[in-house]
Image (tube, rainbow, N blue to C red; front, top):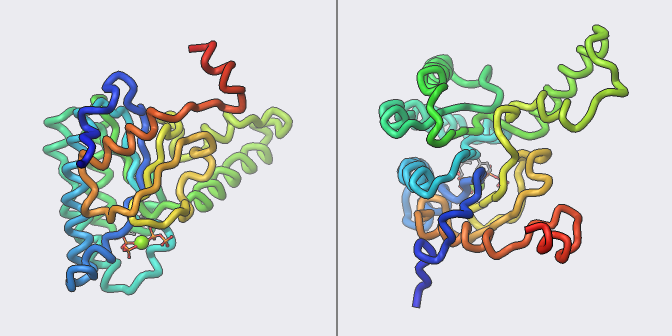
Length: 249
Ligand code: IPE
Ligand code: IPE
Ligand code: MG
């Protein structure tokens, strides 16, 4: 019999920040004899539902890997269709209604201007919303982000604004596009692969990883709660012994 994970999770210990690599749209469509594009549409519907479910569960930050810098190398028609879908999927009214803040991380300069303007406008209008923050990683890769951070720190050092011997991991945290939020507690990847695909390499240093074969369009509240349940069964030790952690609690 299927477990009811929605009932099983401890509502008081829901991870504050969940990051998700939403993979498997293309395979979901191909399995049904459809165009990959239909998989992306079904994936967008899954995102819409997930935002509401995460919000109700009390998740504070939800970061979704939506389009990587490497994804620009896909066939032109798929990229173009994804950009249209993205443009159509920004649900500003819904964010306002639910007090959700919206943000984007990534190399926005590569996005079509109409998409960029719409994303920026939505981010500005929801900047003070704090029930949950929804972060889309778009035209994002961790190596791109880290390279940009190194550039900005190096140029400050060159100008004498920062002493290289005073650079700490906090200096680096602050130079990243994710500086406004805590690191993810839980990373979920759907679609069977067990890899990071250039996502949040620095920020995931101590996150719990959860991989599932479920293809992204099939991901729902029960699957989310299953991941949260597994997260709640783990002990985060941060290098300490299990006894040390138990005694601290
Ligand atoms: C993830 O699904 C969405 C994007 C990367 C834009 P995919 O399109 O990668 O789906 P698969 O991996 O081909 O099934
Ligand atoms: C990762 O999916 C990127 C997103 C989900 C946006 P990919 O489908 O691009 O990952 P790889 O290339 O198979 O690792
Ligand atoms: Mg994929």
